Image (cartoon, rainbow, N blue to C red):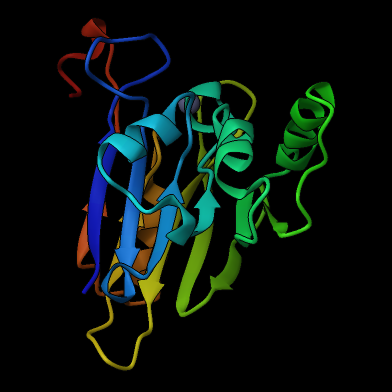
Length: 204
Ligand SMILES: [Zn+2]
């Protein structure tokens, strides 16, 4: 059984009662969890939801804007530091440097149980964590950075496979959609995040 916890749906500006965008994927009957996007304060919010943080096997960052990535160092410090928890972080290049700087500032060393996967801005990246495979499809985003649409597919023998796609706050997710169609991926869940300013009301 795979299910999602949508822990946050907000953007960078603080809004009372809404966390920045973050989605938790539960697989393997809640034994293996994956966090997609990690803005400030996400660890506290997940705790409020009763999430067993030590079961989060991977954190996937869809793009390097702060409301999706800036909580990662705090997450590593709160959940992995001083424990034997293993964590894989898949993100656009540069996240390791960000975490290293924060740890250095606090006089600590990043645990060796943390490892990294760089999501390419130019080509599709495939990777697996435990019995779950992920595909990152580079898509346009605002400003100079690329976004990464994420496809998550579970492969557990004792329950039905699930395919989930998360667009990740993109301004155009058609490349992700094309890939899904080309590969004939039968999605169970499509999570599309979008924000429209008031002058784009028509498009919304
Ligand atoms: Zn963004």
